[in-house]
Length: 325
Ligand code: UT7
Figure 1 (spheres, protein in one colour):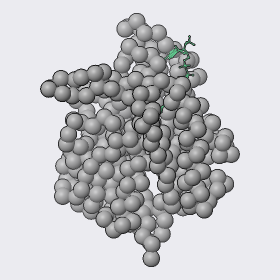
Figure 2: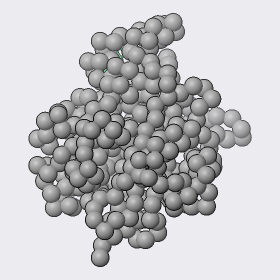
Figure 3: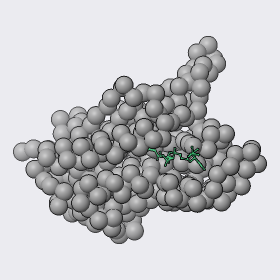
Figure 4: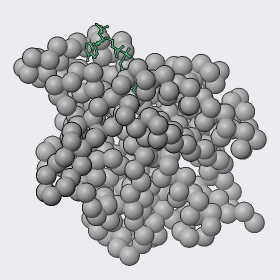
């Protein structure tokens, strides 16, 4: 009999400091940077984001989300036999945020590692965990997306600093005789490294290059719209399903205009799309599990429904996971 993996619990966490567009406009004005609530809302759909306190790390956010996911799944940290954290803003260069989270959680002993695929990180991590469960390498995985993007923003660059926020989301993924994850489709194209990157690194104890986010927004926008549609169709085809079978689209939350375009191409009305970008901003690898958990806890998405999760971001990376909740 084929072995599947199924989400049995979700959780998420937002740091308490909520920064509205008006707050950010006022803060940026102090540094001589001009922007407006109108511009941010019209071009992105973002109204607010959360920023972590200076001493709060990626694994701290991940820990809160993980505890809620474990509670929802009705299991203890010791029941977990695999931890994968999707992040581009880990606590330190190494060890991984997953190892640090494992220790904070008290789940010591199981394999733990990070996946670095920027805003596609969660669909990558979910696909890896699903594959490990299918082969029997794991039975119950904790898959987390956690980011503190506020640490890598250039608050002198208005084209990027208004877009991102901090947060974490998590799922417990368990072996099951019934699906669960139906299909996934992952891609990367390294020709586009430069359009979205943080080009710094550490050498000799010093940061070399530029340690803040750089983005060619228009280039990313154009690529994102094209590849998301292809990944959605490829994933549906692998599961022998069509766009009519999707109950909910849970896309990466970067820009409402990208979501509108993706939904239109899939002939989905916007009331079938989970939208949290207005309240969370772009939280990179955390955005999909955050949106998923909000939709589950608000009763918007229900057990047994078919969800299409879609991520796209730096690398350039993109992918989709189709699943039955
Ligand atoms: O998470 C990974 C995936 N990331 C994404 O999906 C992001 C994709 N890209 C985008 O979402 C959009 O390209 C942005 C939201 C980043 C930018 O929107 P846009 O409609 O492409 O704007 P633009 O870059 O074409 O800029 C239009 C104008 C420019 O002024 P001029 O040259 O027309 O005079 C910018 O200087 O808007 C100006 N502008 C701003 N004005 C006020 C750029 N940022 C701001 C700002 N406030 N914050």
